[in-house]
Image (cartoon, rainbow, N blue to C red; front, side, top):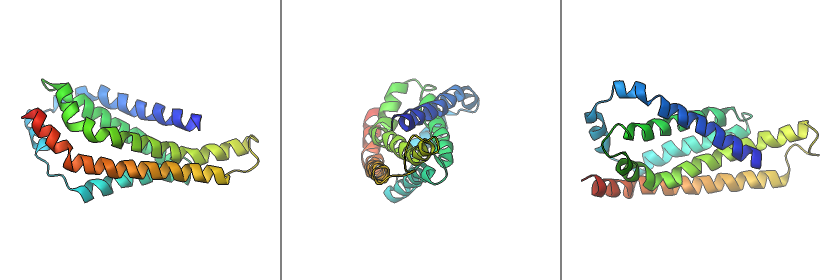
Length: 178
């Protein structure tokens, strides 16, 4: 289980760093009004939940795509988080923006994403171990239980994250940014 977790963090970090380092390109087109418009977005629980569940399911689908969907989504989502965090540094108060707009739900959403990615890499990892004669069976009952446990945890976390993003993050943002 160690290698899928390390792989998950490494791939997400590559995407994240790529997002932050590409912020210079973003800043050339940056307009302070764009940020204000983003702050006025009306959050809808079902829309956010379904969007984030799609991400989780694409991460979990790595179990049947031999990790490909997990890899692509980790890079993509790491990049997006990097852009989001990096764009706050274009403002006067980046830490206030991160605390207001990302942190409240991000403490649930990002771990949910990483846990589901680890699960998405788990089954291919176990199959590789089998192909290298390190295991007797490609997938054991224990492997399936571990996958399902990780999937369940990530889904619970993403439901909590959607709730926080819709009902708590806007209140914190309004309080801190007013």
